[in-house]
Image (cartoon, rainbow, N blue to C red; front, side):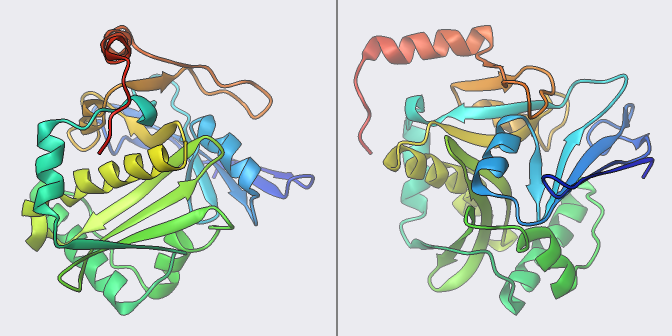
Length: 267
């Protein structure tokens, strides 16, 4: 840490990391800014999400890089998202997959699945894997959930095969983290989990799915642009500033075509 600021009014502790090699783009340097917030309210969590902050436990983070601005906050326009034939095929593959929505938790099943997924990604994509104790898992994925944090458990024939961590916000759903059993990769659970979030948003009239950072040159993050139409956040607005989100030109064209059809899509 190179800075530490305690805001007693909101019980927020702010700090930044030192500059280091970027985990997304090896040729870039990265620096992160953090807010530690004990017992964040629903309203504050929503405002931070709308301004590009990502929550893990009681910590909120956002890139703070001097020479790079390639991490772009992206949100899906859930109300205008259309379910294609390929999406429907994913749903058919998951006809025996059931889901449970509940408060975030930690169990032996969570930890075993988390370990299995990250060891798989270590071999597949070179992710650095560090074993998590129940306490550390809780710090990252359970603590700080307030009345807005949820987990969606995915079961296939009664076996836990996926865990999706989300936040419910004032205007949408923040997609925090998803991990799954690689033995069930044929089910396309990553995509299926996002489709379930979109269905939930449509059901409860929530407009956006906040997917976090999109980096075009990063294979682990560039998939997010396939969920259209989407918006990009302009800059890094403070809590006192109004966030400005916009549709890139190609997304404006997609939105025009959707609206030209002028009919809601049933699923």
